[in-house]
Length: 146
Image (cartoon, rainbow, N blue to C red; front, side, top):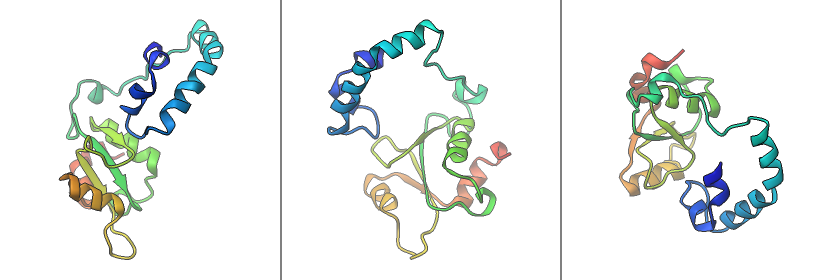
């Protein structure tokens, strides 16, 4: 949290999903919440998230990879929402991303109803990001599906 509080707008822009318009607003909001953050810290609140053992060790089929998922889940992944997919990615050693960027390693792309590639799939192709079907991804993380 100390690093977040000390970050300026340029530092914030280094975070995936935070652009030049959002960054100064976030910096200002964090500064405005300084007293509340101090009270939370005094009460013992920390910014550390418990790590799944496989993710902490950097193991699993997605170790070191940033994975973005798009579309409606079907097949072995049917009914899996955004939070469940993020948890699955982390359990398999990866990190879930929200948008395709140069940091993205894998895009898991469900077919669209129109049959046309999604905007995320187009961007992934432009950046040379590996694109997996739902079936291929489910096979890759089969040991982590509950």
